[in-house]
Amino acid sequence: MLAPHGIPGHLVGFVEALRKRGISVGPSETVDAGRVLSVLDLLDREAVREGLACSLLRRPTHRGVFDALFDLWFPVASGTRDSGQIDTALPRTEGGDVDIDALRELLVDLLSDDSAEAAELTQMLAAQMVEELGQYKSSNGPSFSAYQALRDVAPDTLLRKILDGLLGRADDTPDRPTDDYESEVAKRTAAQRITDLRKMVESETRRRSAEKLGRERVASYGVPKLAEEVDFLRASDTEMAALRRNVTPLARLLASRLAVRRSRSRHGSIDLRRTLRKSMSTGGIPIDLVERKPRRARPELVVLCDVSGSVAGFSNFTLLLVHALREQFSRVRIFAFIDSTDEVTRFFDSGSDLGAAMSRIIRESDLVTYDGHSDYGHALTTFDEKYAHAVTSRSSVLILGDARTNYREPKLPALAHIVSVAKHAYWLNPEPKSQWGSGDSAAKVYADVIAMHECRSAQQLATVVSRLLPV
Image (cartoon, rainbow, N blue to C red; front, top):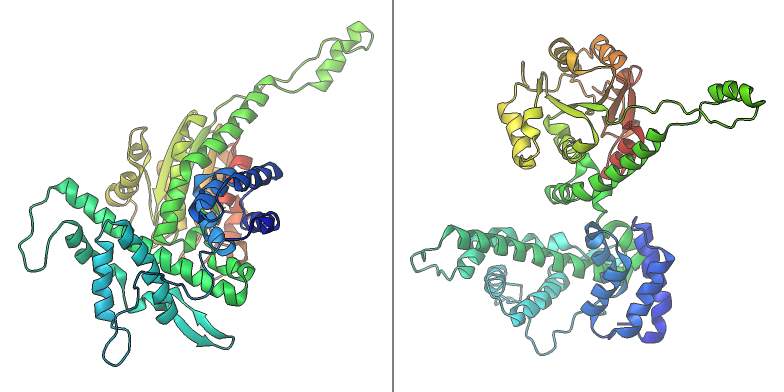
């Protein structure tokens, strides 16, 4: 840890790093963090971590980015980790190379052990793996790779052995009877410990790389993005899970914005022409102000979403967001399509499990007519023929998809009819705007008929939704 006299400038640098990664930290939070550090034991690294997290973070979804940056600005050690009195030497063959099989068995034993000593030994072992297995030569000298450190060990393949260890089963004994609850808990514990091992190796790799390249450079590529900044079309399963956890707070924020706008709209605005006409009876003095009739609140919302594989993650997240915002509208109707369209509103009632709803859409809905590849033209035509009555002059229509038609006819008249009837109509496209019109994309063709907006991340989606949706 840093000496106390070096803390103020170091803290400011850490705060600047948080801001660069999109975490909003104001002067008051920075002052609070300084006060927290003044009363903590600076040699207790985890206490410092938690104290700064409490004073600087506003959203729990930002914790992953915070922890990664904290490890760079407040490293656990310098250079090669000293194991102290704990022997963490990697097992070796007679030739002196690391014995991968023995290392795997050692990891199974450690990850099956609930003791604090095993946890400490695992952390030191992860550091040794980075030092000896993750190091490679580059043009700038020795570098480190978390992938290389874990490649031969393949910790994910150890899940079954760790599970047996947690349940007290040995390879040479029959399975000990366990109930379903105990087995499920053990499975989750084993999976979590493998994830924790990966995080230890990744954290150590960032620390060693930062010592060579500088923490600012490592922070630019080695720190994960905020959940709301992750690209929908490139998100991993883990990132999509984090996005889904972010739906509720994001929906709450958008709902409050819509509620404020609706409250203001109910009051109406001053009708200047009628006010001046009425002022003629009082000598031209506008004593009585005449307000315009306020707009009707809670519009209807109609959503058409492409649920094919290429944009399934984007549509999934957006539908979860729409479901969370359903109380802001008088009526919400949801239609899904691949090469044909079907209404799926029934899967999104107030008490439904949203994960199961998405599975049921694919399994039970009539979304495929031909080959199961996206056909926006046929899907839009099907909607216009079967469900045109769903769109009225009070409806706001949202179309979700990348507009990639597999070189099939886009059928613009069907879309034009939907847009002409609706009060508002918008297309949300998860692809970068620079790719619209490339290959089989009909985005530019559709953009001549309907307002199309780029929505590559949850952050962009929230901005577009809060700006476009009427009150």
